[in-house]
Length: 629
Image (tube, rainbow, N blue to C red; front, side, top):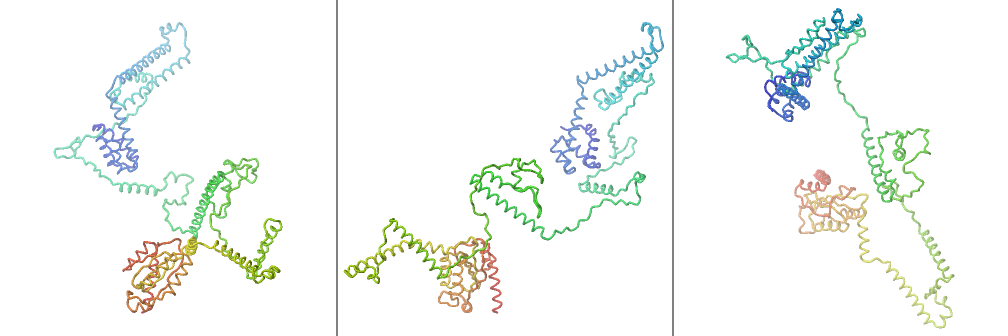
C-alpha cells in the first residue's frame, strides 16, 4: 500500500537519522531510495533487495525499523480520524480538569476566609479559631496541589501537542487550562515551562515561468545537487574519518591536568608490518609422526574392540573405544592416563594422597576374565633365524636311538602278551644259522619258505610306498604350488630390453615360459626398444632371468619371417635394465602389444601406472645408441 506525499515528508527526518546511525554519516541517496520503496508500496523482502547495495548486511535491521515507523504512523493516522473511544477519553480528561479546578477554587476561598477572619467564616467555623501555624500549613498544601495540577495539565498538553489527532492542533488550549494558569498567577507561582517542539515542514517549491527555483520574494535559489555515492566511496570516507580520529592529538583538557607529562610522546596507532615467520626444522615431521601414531592407536583399538565383541567382553570393548582427550607433548606425563580415566569417577581430583581402597571403580569386580589368545595385529620385527642342521654322524646316531626306542616298545608289548611275537627275519645268507637242523632235514622246503617270506616283505614294502605316493592331481598341485609363490611380502618385477624381437620362435619361448612359471606382465614391440616386463615370485624370476640372459641365443636368426636389417640382427642383445619389488601386480596375463610410436607405447604403460618403465628403457636405448656411434 503506497503512502501519500505528506506522510512521506513526515517520515523523511526519521529515515535520515536512522541512515546516519547505521552508516555513520548522512547519505541522501539511501534516504531517497528508502522513501521510494515505501512510496511504491513494496514489501519487506523487495525493500531489502533494493537497499542491500547501499547498506550490505545492515539492510535487514534498517527495513525492520522503517516498517515499524510506518505502522506507528498508520496507527496515528487512524487515531486522527477519531472515534467514539477517543471522544470519551477526551471528555473524561476535561471533566477531571474541571473538577480539580473547582476543588482548588473552593479550597482557596475557605483558606482566605479563615485567614481574614470574616464573620461568615467565624459562623461557619462555629466559634472555633485556627492557629497561624495550621493555617500556614494548609496554605502550603493548597499551593503544592495547585502546582502539581498545573504541571500535570502542562504535561498533558505537551503530549497532546505531539499527537495533534487527539485534541486538535498544537496550541489549542481549553478554558480549563487557562483557569489553572490564572490560579497559579494569582497565588504568585510561576507556571511550568513547556518546551515547544519544532515541527519540521518541507519548504514549498516555487518555480517561475522559466522553470527556475525561486523563494517567496522571487529571488533565484540554488538547490544542492545530491549525486549518488558508490559503495567504494562510502568505504573511503569511513576510512578517512577513522584515520583522522587516530591522528587526533589529546585535547586541552588532558594537557591541563596535573598528570599529563609533556615529555611523553604519544604515537598514533599504526598497523605493524608483517614479517616472515619461519618454522623450526622438524616441526612438521613431529606433527606427522604424532598423527601416524594416533591413527595406529585408533586402528589397534578397533581391532581390540572387534575381538572383544566376539568373545563377549563388553567391558573390554568400552575400554578399547576410549581415546585420549588431548594431545600430550613429548616427555610430558599426563595427570591421568586415558585407560584409567574410564574406570575412575569423573568428579574426583587425583592427588598423591588419594586412596583408591574405598573408591568405586567402573567395571572392576571380583571375577576373573580369560581373554582369547589372538595373534598380534602387526608384523613382528624379530630377525629370521636359520634352523640347526645335524651332521651325518649325528643324524645316524639320532636314527639309531629312535629305532631302539621303537623296538623296546614292541618287546614290552610281546612280553605282556598284547601282541604275538614277530616271525624271525630269514634270508638266504642266514638260513643255516637261523633254522639249524630244519634246514638240514629238508633244504628245498626251507628255501621255498624263506623265499616266500622275502617276497612277502618286498610286497609289504612296495604297498607302503604306493600308499605314500602322490596321485597325478596331487603331484600337479604340488608343482603349481611351488611355482605360485607367496607374494605377501611384495611382487618381484623385472624389466628387459631387447633390440629386435621379430623372431616368432623367440616370441613363443618368452610367452610360453612366462605362462609356465605363472608370471604376469606385458611385451611392447617398438623399433629398437622391445620391452618385456614380468611380475611374479623370486624363484620364477630367477628361472626366467636365466632364460632371457643365457638360454636364448639372440644373435641367431633361423626363421625366414625374421624381419629387421642385418646390423640389428648381428647386434641383437637382451639387457636387464631394472629389477625390484612392488606392492601388487600391475598387469594381467602375458600379452604382446605392437606400438608404432613412442607416445602410444607410453600411453600403454601409463594406463597400468608404470610409465616409468618405458621412460627408463627409452633413455637406456638413447644412451646405447650414442655409445655405438
